[in-house]
Length: 219
Image 1 (spheres, one colour):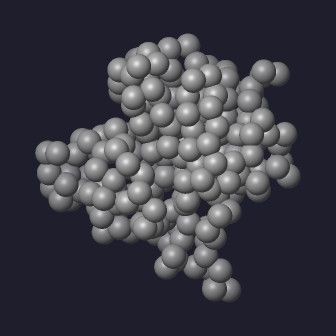
Image 2 (cartoon, rainbow, N blue to C red):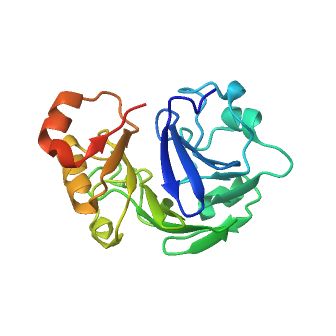
């Protein structure tokens, strides 16, 4: 069972299990509720995963909106949530722009900015323009989880408030450099951090730089 060796956290809404599923994907199990963010079939075989009650998308790039992954997870009752760019692909229960909130089954979901400042395509456009996609802060009662989405270190990270768990991307040129990742971890202040979206990772260097105050968890 995929949840056997996963990290579990106590919240006012019940026991929360967090399962990082490769690349930018994550699965949350809150008691019997199943939540997916950006399921991606190239890093995970979803045939053994439970069906989705809700799927939340950060944006519609191929490694975040993957129809092959959805084939194994979606039922007629699955709810879809995402930014406006997802409306051309799916019927959304809720379209969320940066700053919007949505309450689903007592879980509060806040859409926050996720974008590039420095990293750009050859034509000068950012890989992820501001406002195109979202990061999300999930409030499971008193317990907050930040899923950053595809983003660099951005000023809005200072305004998130207390975060208990953060999932932060680390790969150039699309998201954060090692130095930006470390700055983000320190700014956000979450005691538990999942590095995601990475191609390679020097665990020893990261852990040494962050010390014992931050627990890094890897897929």
